[in-house]
Length: 109
Length: 113
Image (tube, rainbow over all chains, first blue to last red):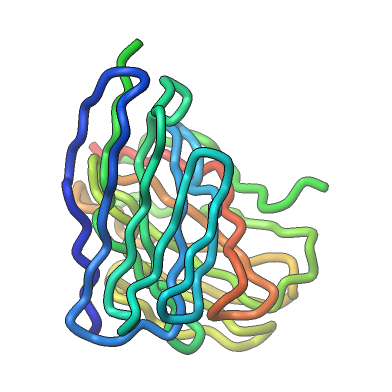
């Protein structure tokens, strides 16, 4: 079973700061998805990356897929309190999606 | 569109009781999933289905059962509830597995006492 490691596990920053969270594996991903989960809600898809070296932007969020497709990062510029939540990466294999343990981000006003 | 609907939102069970968590999707998705999420943790796959009449075990299937008689519905059955099954349960669906995103319900918070 391919394991996904996310880091850091917890991150607390001030509004306006930049941050990066990581998702790593020892094996190659066929594709990777990033989700954000707010308290009391289910995860919501942010992006899917498929091609090694791919970079996708979603407003202040930048997602990068490693060249070897073993790692991915999510960078948030000028974080806002509304970015607070649990960020999960998920790896698709066949019919299944396996998640990492997530990064709990808190952005303080 | 309603998307993925889960009922109930909250439930307290006594040890040994049974219950069914309901999940319905109106997007005509073939793939449906049940996950559990313990506090501060990621999601663990319990069972999944690739279409009506087809189900398969995930990472943590013990103590649960599922059925998929229609495309829309994918109920999760807990038999003989145990405190270890206290968790938040999420149902999800996808049109195609792999690169397509999953749509999640808002979850069922279950406490077994």
